[in-house]
Structure formats: C-alpha cells, structure tokens
Length: 410
Image 1 (cartoon, helix red, strand yellow):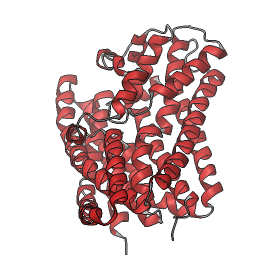
Image 2 (tube, one colour):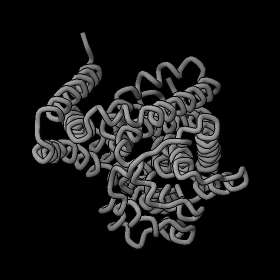
Image 3 (cartoon, rainbow, N blue to C red):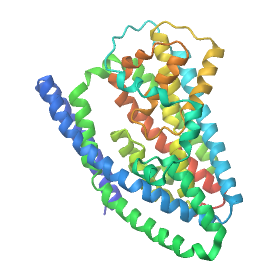
Image 4 (cartoon, rainbow, N blue to C red):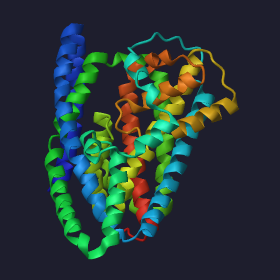
C-alpha cells in the first residue's frame, strides 16, 4: 500500500503535468491579455501555498534552534558545529561559482548571440543598492526580533535564536520550563507542516500553469543553448555534491535522496527552496540527523549555502558580458567571483535574489546592468533548477555535519 508521503509526491507530479498541458492550451488558445489575466488568477494558488509555508518558518526556526542549542550545552559546542557548517558552506559555494565560470568560458553560450531584451529589469535593478559589505554586516543583526519574524528574515532569526539558546544553556535549571515549552511548540509546528504540505499540489499546479500560459514552450527553443548548458552545469554540480555526500555518508546517500525527493520536487516546481524548509527539517530528522544539528545548520544553510544560485550567478554574469562582446581577463573574472562570494550571502528572502546580486555585480565591472532583461524571459525555468539544487546542497551539508558530530542515527 502506498504511503502518505508517496501519495503526496504522486499528486505533485500529476499536478505538474496537468499544469503544463493546461498552460500550453491557454497559451495557444487565448488572446494575450486574457491568458495573462487567467495566469495571474492561477498564481493565487501558489501564493496561498507559499504564504502557508512562510507563516510557520519563523516559529519553527526559533523554537527548534533554541531547543537545539540548549541541548548542545555550551558555546564551545555551538562554535564547533557552526565552524564545521561554515567550512562546508564556503567550500561548496566556491566550487559552485568556479564551475559556473569554467562552463561559460569553455562553452561560450553568449558569443555571437543576438538577443533582444525580453522583460522589464527595472524592478531587479532597483534592489541592487542594498548589496554592500557594510549593509550585509548590519543586516545580520535584527533591530527587532518581532520585525525579523514578521518579514521572515531567517538569518536575523538565527542570530537572535543563538543568543537566546546560549543564554538558556548558561542558566541551567531556570531555563528548563522555557526550553520544554519551545520543544512542545516545535512538535506542534512540525505537525502543522504535514497539514500545509497537503496544499502543495495546488501550489505546484498554479505555478507551472501560469508560467507556461504566459511564456509558452516556444521561449525554451529561443534560449535552448543557454538553458541546456546551464542545466548541464547543474548536472555536474549534482554529481560533485552527491559524490561528496557519498564520500562521507556512504550507502546512506540513497536513503537521503529518497527522503528528500518530495522537497526537491516542490522546490523545482514552485521555484522556492524556502518553501520546503519545514518539510526538509522533518525529513532530515527522520533520516537520522539529530534535531539540535538540523535546527542549527539548515537555517544557516538557507543564507550561506545556496549552491544552485551560486553557480547561476557566475554563469549569468559572464553570459551577459559575452552577449555584449565585453572581454574579461582571468584576473577580472576571479575578482568578480570573489565579489559574488561576499555579496550573495543572506539573500534567500529576496525575490529573484540571484538576479539582484547579478545586477549589482554587473554594474561594478562595467557590464550594462540592463543586460538582466536578456535573461528575464527564461529566469523562471532556470530558477526551477537552482532551487532544487539548493535543497540538495543543504540536505547533504546538514547530514555530513551530523556525521562529523557523531549524531547521525539510523
């Protein structure tokens, strides 16, 4: 008999197929104004699902992280776990950025390509001013934990939770009632995750049908080389990530991938890796990762370990430079890579975050920022792949850190 998880996964896949068929039917059978109106209405399904997920992210991160740190016991252990996690994150980010740079230089997808701007880049360009090192450091620390939770600033919630959890651990018995209460809250929120995931097929259907209705499948042929080479890069990155995971986890990598298949599918179809964070936490704990490690490492990963987005940043930046015929020597490209490494952290909550960082970086290196409009028509399709890759990268990172800590159970 099919389990509840497998039934939900099946319904998600069926929703994707129905969404593609219905969206294509609308694209070829409706006037442009009509299909855009219908597509906007379909997006409501996705918006409702994403809002349901976002309403539980802040309480889940806070409750699980505080309980996890309190169980870790002292600042030394917190520092060790955090240090190991950041070591993995920085290594994975660097590999992803370098892979994107190597692929663009080797395959040259933008050389000799004549594209017309296919979208309004004003919204993306308008957000580029926030990405400076000074603003990033200031942004780490919340002015108000209520504001951070209201806006789902995961990194700020993590910072507050670390201070709160360490304080609980340091005062011992006085904090036990608080920790016990938050542990109960975490169990309640995880129960809510199951209810919310029942809406996933509707969210997936709305997202797929809307984008196909507006753009059709023809846009894929126009950008076939760009999309194909980007997904080739993602395939190589998956092999690297899975290989690294197998090196540390051995045969258990098969079980891990089986457990996270549903979160990967949801992230791919909704283009939101954040949407599956609560479900991913639940599946990683079922896999055997201790709650104290999952609740600490995974939220950090959503700010510092977006492997798919990392690769896309160098890929898209250098592609746009190639389209404009702008040559960049190796030194300039390495400087761009390091710039992206710094400016890309803590951006998970920003819509079209990867494009915002790319636009900010282009301006620093003399590439027309308006080049973002060249890739806007197919950004959704690229975002599907990079969101799914972000989920895989964070799942492997959390599992490996658990293994390093000796906390990976059966």
